[in-house]
Amino acid sequence: MRISPKLTQRIAVTLLGTATGATLLVLLFIIGFVLEKGLPVVSFSFLFSMPKDMGRAGGILPTLVGTLLLPLLAIAIALPLGVGTAVYLTEYTRETRLTRVIRFGTDCLAGIPSIIFGLFGFIFFVTTLKMGWSLLSGGLTLAIMVLPTIIRTSEEAIRAVPRAWREVSFSLGATRWETVTKVVLPNALPGIVTGVMLSVGRSIGETAAVIFTAGSSLRMPHSVFDSVRTMAVHFYIMAREGISNENAYGTAAVLVISILAVNTLTYWLMHRFIARRAR
Amino acid sequence: MRSSLIVKITREQVVEKLLLAVACSAIMSLLLIAVFIVKEGAPFLVKVGPRDFLFSSDWRPQAGHFGIYPMIVASLWVTLGALLMGGPLGIAGAIFLTEFAPPALMRVVKPAIELLAGIPSVVFGFIGVMVLAPLVRAYAGGPGLSVLAAAVILGIMILPTVLSIAADAIASVPQSFREGALALGATRWQAVHMVVLKAARSGILAGLILGMGRAIGETMAVIMVAGNAVKVPHSPLDSVRTLTANIALEMGYATGMHRQALFATGIVLFIGIMLLNGSAMLVMQRRKGKT
Image 1 (cartoon, helix red, strand yellow):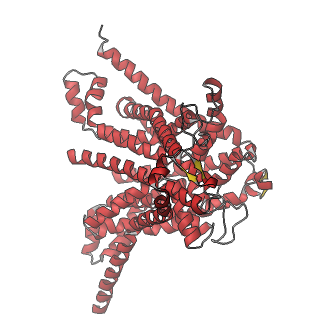
Image 2: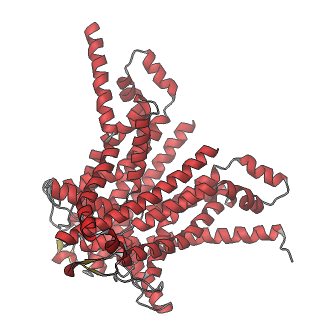
Image 3: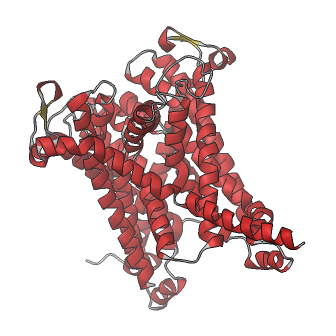
């Protein structure tokens, strides 16, 4: 007996819809679980006091500072490099063998898993360049890790700036660089910011690359040569070594909320950017 | 007037050279990474011999035995398991959202699933330990922390990658293909699975391969849920240690030969990922060449 095509379609669509629904439920469950267990622990004093007894008691202030500083440093290093690369690729050259090599390298870099970045950062920045486990080593490692994201999003944003605007700028006697800095980059800014936010989100959640380069000191950092512990690393150590499940949940809740906030902001920015372009 | 023009021109040239140097930063970083990992690991590979390293099951660093065969098998099992979990769900989601869901639903669901990609791997790992592993222990047996638990968690983690790449591939199939099928009397589902999916095949494949790359490289979540026992798995309920977990677990205290062995493990992982990503790029390029 043949099942009618109409029925087959109903069955297929139901199955597909169920699969999508299941995916969503998993997402909601994960976020809900972490927030339900973690939020009761989070308080003003949890956020802004020093940890005691390896994190068994007290707060997470130094990890909050670490989570703030490390992505900031990584972006400060990666942003000029990434935007510079994008500007070169779009404004200063045609498609040549060199640009293909640069694009290929960027794609490869994007696919490298974080543990390899951790290994590299450890052997290069920490050991060979003698920076030790520090904010600087971690920041440099993360900078390389997020570089492909920044290059790609900036390139897209720059390409979206209408050609005519550049031509107007040239016709007024501006040089290429003046056109880039006064016309192209200001108009590509929202797109570039989107790339930055994506990178910040990724840096906040990163563990494997950070733990071997920035270390895991629970003290307050005083310079870029001090070791820091980010929230993600703190959460990992507490959960894995069974130091305190309660504080681990609390840290996880703060971590997830910060990442959701960053990503939501990114999404909002991206949509505003797209909407503006469509106009 | 004239001198300022000269200043402008030379400044332009300096800027161009500077930008060229900056543009090489990504490729230089990639080279630096490859060189330093190889420099640390290659002497060890030469000394021990790739055969003993890759195909011996004896991993006892203190006794000077370095065989990563169990870790290679574990990485493959966990990755394939993740693909079995996340692949069909991701593709199903992509089809539903691009072809059947009302646009309003799509606008809410797609960003929500992209948020899933932002949840850090340690949080996935922790959920695996607290929620999934006890379930596996209770209903399937074994220690709970296992290939199965790791595959499920990794499957969820690669889902957004598979879904968004597959969705892009499906959305980029020309509308006329669908209209042609519908005009011949096909139902929407027939048009989708007979025409659209065939046309989007290579893009979907690329998504699956990139998802595999993500699964094989994932570290923190796997350390937490796979159990980390160094042995060749015989059932999905066995505890295993993947290549990535091996590096991360022992890097903290390894010295000398042991540390070199971990870097050599890194080389194996690096080559595996490059092969996967390279083939994904090839598949994507072929697609571009065709249209």
